[in-house]
Image 1 (cartoon, one colour):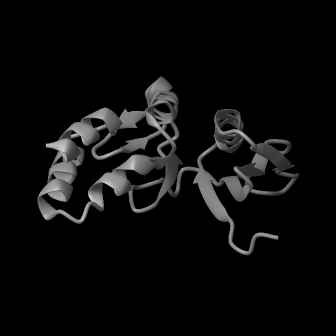
Image 2 (cartoon, one colour; image 1 turned 45 degrees about the vertical axis):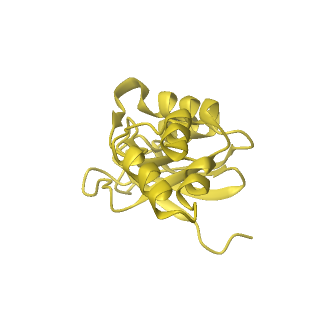
Length: 157
């Protein structure tokens, strides 16, 4: 049993978001959907919470109304094996109203912040030669979506 579960507060899109996320990431699924009953803060029968898994990690989404919204103070980071995986997640998460940011960060159409990070970024930035690692860092700072080929060019000088 997972001891800590990330809980995501939505206005009214918890089920839509959970369905989107579980369709995007392999080995993911909806676990449970609970609904508001009579005399509660939500419309009777409407979705209250959705429990779901992404890559075996538990998440909870709640339709809590507009009181709280997401900010960049918290994000979900996706470690990608290669440029194809970066492109897939970046393109899908920014589609339909998502917003690109800097250095591999984006917000999806629900306002949740994500970091789409190729494993090669840390490999190339951790070069013991400070000039090489600085070139990689400088290249990354100028990117929105991280480009592994461009990082490699910066690394190789």
